[in-house]
Image 1 (cartoon, rainbow, N blue to C red):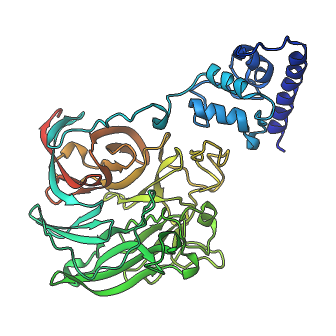
Image 2: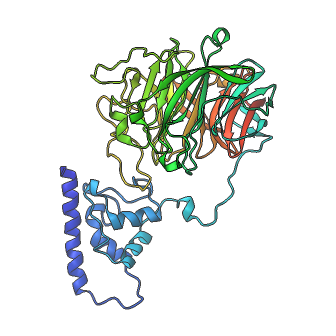
Length: 493
């Protein structure tokens, strides 16, 4: 056991000994009498956390500003009951009574409670659509560009008047002059979209070949099932990429660009990633999530938890790893679930957003051969409040350029270039799922100088897209729409 954990355990045990003695000498607690929480704290907790919760060399301070494991009332109760074995803190569930545990949990300061503990859910506050919203630089007008979609995941403009949209349920749609064609493109791949409430699969991203005007290639990523038709919990699926063309409103000439070995397919319904981006050299970048098994992200022979790089036809582009057995398409490792990709038009660098667990969402610059740390390094914790790793840094591991704690559920990413919002040129647009916000990030090289929420959407924002007209288009679900943002007025010069 590391020295700091051993000292912490010794101090906790030392604190417990007087507690036992004191309890034997105390008068029996009268029936119905509430435990003395302050006395409980002094006997059981002050030895490590200080008599005024100020912290010592053996234990951290106990305040909402310093909690690492959530800090709500239920988090505190759980930690008292179960302990934190990784930090040498023992469980008190067998030492204290239920009344004493509850008294201590009530005594310690808490952070704001989680939504499920706040009573009846309160209506979300979103910006009006149609309507106008004030930001630092502009009054922004929001309007519904396309309605009646089901989980619009991505969008790409073929020309100034025509766009393609993917619906996660498996449909590829055409929008012409702001009008949605009622007929989905026929013949697109069969996708696996689980009925699980945490489903993240389906038809995901689309991208145009850099030479699309000449060759017509369109790329699709999706969750590919090995055994479609089986019960949901038995369907094994994995991220797959195909390319094809659209002719007479049908998907034709399909070719498989990326398909993992069948041994890597999994029955989990989440962490497919699947964003598509062509880099300045014309190579296709594809992130694949860890599929819910974190250790896969560090296995060089496993496609999960990696960024892949390949030619447009799927042949490897030459990977930067010298390790034997590394898959030839792997470009970087240690990814959990990348949800956004964007190419900086000035520098050619690839930026990516990544979902952390409970906290620790990341914004990264993707480097050839880079190790992005998951799961040995993270700024997040497990969903149950327990620690994943004590490390936020490690030798040889890339640091995020920015991270969010608590999580905002980062999604699609785009650099703004256009005439509609000239003050935003060179800034990053970031959609979020959890808070349904559009963030505007001001950069200084690799640093985020300012993070402004410029729009609160009625639906989750899977991707922001900058149109040929300079307007910003948001792909959303719940409701499934494309929302168009334009400048109603400029606030500063």
